[in-house]
Image (cartoon, rainbow, N blue to C red; front, side, top):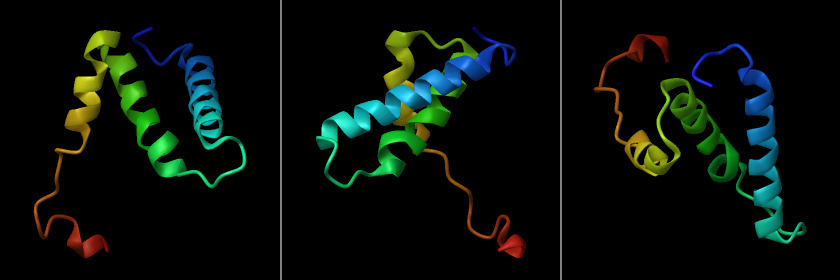
Amino acid sequence: MGTSSGLRPWVEALAGRLVDELLERSGGSQPVDLLAGVAEQLPVAVTAELLGVPDADRPLLRAADGLAAVPDGVGSSYR
């Protein structure tokens, strides 16, 4: 894919799959963690798709996602 044109259907399908998988794991009747099940995974997957990261390497990108940090004081005037 690699570009934003035509990406919307792919993102919508991915979001649907993530929600379906989350509900399936919960048995459809248990509370779910939407943040861990969808909100943390979707942006990383979209970024990987846009950058052309091969499927086999995407778990590495997900692992590195939590490494980014904002130094203390940066942006504090906007809080």
